[in-house]
Length: 338
Length: 120
Image (cartoon, rainbow over all chains, first blue to last red):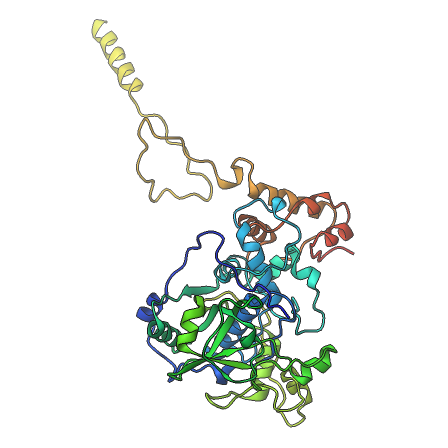
């Protein structure tokens, strides 16, 4: 299997702030740069080159969870990717923009910029491959006015570029962002060895591997001095595979992560970005889910499939859960994060 | 007689130098801070935005009016208006209007991507 092209370099200059300003503005608020306890919800990119979109979904999910907005706020990876495909046409007349986009990958920073300008959609509003109702034609088509109206309530994503010069500055910068409740995504090159990794520590990546390619991936744990733990949305859990009617693909470690040494990560990292603030998205499901399951503390959560129950089913299935609170305001409110 | 003529002439001179009447303050306007007086070479004040030359904003307004005309009231965002979304989208390469402008029924507007809320 050949690895698809995932992230692309910026096709034109993108204005960006740096993580240095974040460090100056906000003190650390987490004890360790470890986001594993906040990781919820399964992500799967199927065979599409949409790793940038799925990486943004994980970044958003981590950000909302760490900032107490909701444990499993899943942004639409398909919409994220579509914004990345559309972003190079920023400033052009819409009628001259292609009606259909090729599945050739996207620039992570341009994707952030597009989401900042046009807004976010949730997974249920614009399903991705991991959800029933996914429509690939919709993902590669210019966005409709109805989708843009929905997303408009959630414009204003905040993001920054992570600057680094060597292994230690990359590690320190990632940690500095993560302890301030920001999520980090990395655009890197991966080879077929990484693609087929089943849990071993990745210490080297072959740049010459013809089956390798670009991948955009979220950092989950930067607390270890030897390696970083990265998310992996190539693996499909048995539960999700059964729901979607697809075979299980056991890539990555059993918990759906990769471990890559910092030195290896630095050598193959092409771009690192920080997801530092998102519009507040209030949905009844999020609030009810959080109330039904109770607040989780750091260190209490793991890969969200200890049983066959989908996380979304917990609220419906558990008979002992207290009655949900009165329906919260379902309006999507604009706001700023950190 | 001569003194009377001089008095009339002086009175006429004073009346000719009177300042012109001040225009009334427009309704809803404020005269609390009139700002600097423009010099003789200053450009004329810019007209209100809504009266600006045709541009993307007008295209959005026209399309919105067209949708209303064909009995399709598009869904509004929570904050702002459909026209605001249109203007913002078009600045960033999104929100095509050609299909919307061609629509003659709510169904055709829906097929062009509009979420009509009031149409049957």
